[in-house]
Image: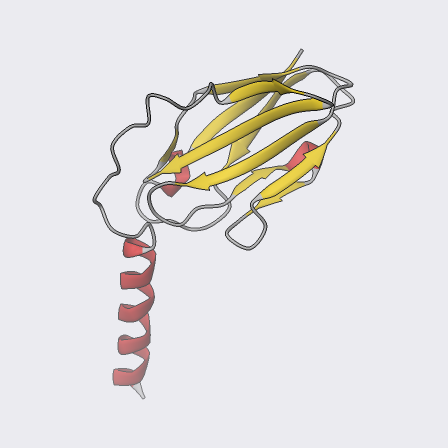
Length: 128
Protein backbone atom coordinates (compact mmCIF):
# COMPACT_ATOMS: atom_id res chain seq x y z
CA UNK A 1 0.00 0.00 0.00
CA UNK A 2 2.83 2.40 0.86
CA UNK A 3 4.58 1.63 -2.43
CA UNK A 4 1.43 2.46 -4.37
CA UNK A 5 1.02 5.75 -2.49
CA UNK A 6 4.66 6.70 -3.11
CA UNK A 7 4.29 5.81 -6.80
CA UNK A 8 1.14 7.93 -7.15
CA UNK A 9 2.78 10.89 -5.41
CA UNK A 10 5.82 10.56 -7.68
CA UNK A 11 3.64 10.55 -10.78
CA UNK A 12 1.72 13.61 -9.52
CA UNK A 13 4.97 15.50 -8.92
CA UNK A 14 6.31 14.61 -12.37
CA UNK A 15 3.06 15.79 -14.01
CA UNK A 16 3.09 19.06 -12.06
CA UNK A 17 6.71 19.79 -12.96
CA UNK A 18 6.36 18.91 -16.64
CA UNK A 19 2.86 20.25 -17.30
CA UNK A 20 4.19 23.20 -19.25
CA UNK A 21 5.19 20.87 -22.04
CA UNK A 22 8.46 20.88 -23.86
CA UNK A 23 10.97 23.58 -23.19
CA UNK A 24 11.71 24.29 -26.85
CA UNK A 25 10.49 27.73 -27.67
CA UNK A 26 9.10 28.98 -30.92
CA UNK A 27 10.78 31.95 -32.57
CA UNK A 28 9.10 35.27 -31.89
CA UNK A 29 6.58 36.33 -34.51
CA UNK A 30 7.58 39.88 -35.27
CA UNK A 31 4.90 40.26 -37.95
CA UNK A 32 1.90 39.76 -35.67
CA UNK A 33 -0.19 42.76 -34.57
CA UNK A 34 -0.07 44.18 -31.06
CA UNK A 35 -1.61 42.08 -28.31
CA UNK A 36 -4.59 44.45 -28.10
CA UNK A 37 -6.19 45.62 -31.33
CA UNK A 38 -9.29 47.58 -32.16
CA UNK A 39 -11.61 45.53 -34.34
CA UNK A 40 -14.89 46.36 -36.00
CA UNK A 41 -17.48 46.02 -33.27
CA UNK A 42 -14.97 45.60 -30.44
CA UNK A 43 -11.47 45.08 -29.15
CA UNK A 44 -9.35 41.95 -29.51
CA UNK A 45 -6.80 40.88 -26.91
CA UNK A 46 -4.49 37.93 -27.48
CA UNK A 47 -2.84 36.47 -24.39
CA UNK A 48 0.25 34.68 -25.67
CA UNK A 49 1.31 32.20 -23.00
CA UNK A 50 4.74 30.62 -22.76
CA UNK A 51 6.37 28.77 -19.89
CA UNK A 52 5.53 30.76 -16.78
CA UNK A 53 4.72 34.11 -18.43
CA UNK A 54 2.36 36.02 -20.66
CA UNK A 55 3.84 38.07 -23.51
CA UNK A 56 2.73 41.44 -22.06
CA UNK A 57 2.91 42.84 -18.55
CA UNK A 58 -0.45 44.52 -19.15
CA UNK A 59 -3.25 44.68 -21.69
CA UNK A 60 -5.35 47.84 -22.12
CA UNK A 61 -8.99 48.00 -23.19
CA UNK A 62 -11.79 50.55 -23.04
CA UNK A 63 -14.78 50.40 -20.71
CA UNK A 64 -18.13 49.83 -22.40
CA UNK A 65 -16.67 48.37 -25.61
CA UNK A 66 -16.85 44.62 -26.30
CA UNK A 67 -13.58 42.74 -25.75
CA UNK A 68 -12.74 39.36 -27.24
CA UNK A 69 -9.90 37.67 -25.35
CA UNK A 70 -8.07 34.78 -27.00
CA UNK A 71 -5.59 32.46 -25.30
CA UNK A 72 -2.62 31.43 -27.45
CA UNK A 73 -0.60 28.66 -25.79
CA UNK A 74 2.58 29.07 -27.82
CA UNK A 75 4.63 27.08 -25.31
CA UNK A 76 3.25 24.66 -22.73
CA UNK A 77 -0.30 24.20 -21.49
CA UNK A 78 -1.84 27.17 -19.69
CA UNK A 79 -5.16 28.76 -18.86
CA UNK A 80 -6.19 32.33 -18.10
CA UNK A 81 -8.62 33.69 -15.57
CA UNK A 82 -9.99 37.19 -14.90
CA UNK A 83 -12.29 36.69 -11.92
CA UNK A 84 -13.94 40.14 -12.04
CA UNK A 85 -15.33 39.46 -15.53
CA UNK A 86 -15.85 35.68 -15.23
CA UNK A 87 -13.24 34.99 -17.90
CA UNK A 88 -11.99 31.39 -17.86
CA UNK A 89 -9.85 30.27 -20.78
CA UNK A 90 -8.11 26.95 -21.42
CA UNK A 91 -7.39 24.60 -24.33
CA UNK A 92 -11.06 23.67 -24.73
CA UNK A 93 -12.30 27.28 -24.44
CA UNK A 94 -9.72 29.61 -25.99
CA UNK A 95 -11.92 32.66 -26.67
CA UNK A 96 -14.28 34.71 -24.53
CA UNK A 97 -16.14 37.95 -25.30
CA UNK A 98 -17.41 40.39 -22.68
CA UNK A 99 -18.03 44.10 -22.20
CA UNK A 100 -16.13 45.60 -19.24
CA UNK A 101 -18.49 47.69 -17.12
CA UNK A 102 -15.93 49.15 -14.72
CA UNK A 103 -12.52 50.75 -14.94
CA UNK A 104 -9.43 49.67 -13.06
CA UNK A 105 -6.65 47.09 -13.01
CA UNK A 106 -7.67 43.45 -12.94
CA UNK A 107 -5.27 40.53 -12.46
CA UNK A 108 -5.01 37.86 -15.14
CA UNK A 109 -3.61 34.61 -13.76
CA UNK A 110 -2.74 31.23 -15.21
CA UNK A 111 -5.56 28.90 -14.19
CA UNK A 112 -3.85 25.59 -14.97
CA UNK A 113 -1.06 24.29 -12.75
CA UNK A 114 1.86 24.53 -15.16
CA UNK A 115 4.91 23.79 -13.05
CA UNK A 116 7.39 25.51 -10.77
CA UNK A 117 6.79 29.04 -12.12
CA UNK A 118 2.98 28.82 -12.06
CA UNK A 119 2.51 31.10 -9.03
CA UNK A 120 4.32 33.94 -10.80
CA UNK A 121 2.44 33.62 -14.11
CA UNK A 122 0.41 36.83 -13.91
CA UNK A 123 -0.37 39.89 -15.96
CA UNK A 124 -2.94 42.72 -15.75
CA UNK A 125 -6.00 43.84 -17.71
CA UNK A 126 -6.34 47.62 -17.48
CA UNK A 127 -9.79 48.96 -18.33
CA UNK A 128 -9.73 52.69 -19.11
